[in-house]
Image 1 (tube, helix red, strand yellow):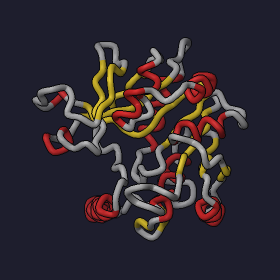
Image 2: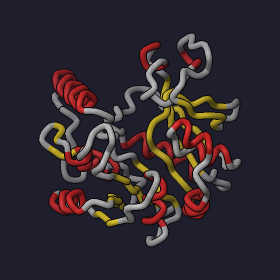
Image 3: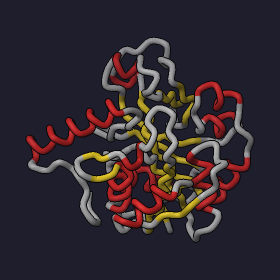
Image 4: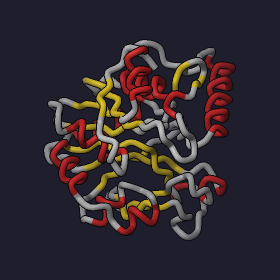
Length: 256
């Protein structure tokens, strides 16, 4: 199974302009994501997809592979779809560009779920909510799954209605593995009503009857960067890791 990781990034973030090039522990955010995807042994190639020449230049500077894409894409998955249409791959992994601490093991777990005789169209990941603060935070996307581990719904709202801890709530992790054909079909669909309301591109699949399998992962799965405060939080976490393990978790060339 030839699996390629594509990292969609844009400079013009509404809440945090220039986010991919913001420095975290001495490296641009996009490099952290790139190195962690690169550290997953199941991934044969890593590509950054962007519409900004500054990001393109930064990726080249640290030795990564980058492709320029259209300025017109509505979502990260649409940007990933453009790259997918031009490369040889069986599976495309969309690794969110604002997840600098994504664990290579999480990427591997999502790809492992694809490695079956009848692979699902889309696989994503989730972990247990840490507590009421995450449950009530609209920046933390919640996912509700059925008894087979298929996604029923994703929301920024507090779902299910009453959080009781444990298995009651799951936090979505920003990663998707697509069968290549399924991704190309997905990006050809119009943006749906729920997708617009929630601001969540994965709801386009749900609205069109495309199943999403959810892999549950335990432990620390990473932290999404939506603001400068999140960046500072990530740096604090890395420094705490250094106190415990002697390793900040800053990826180097070919390791994470």
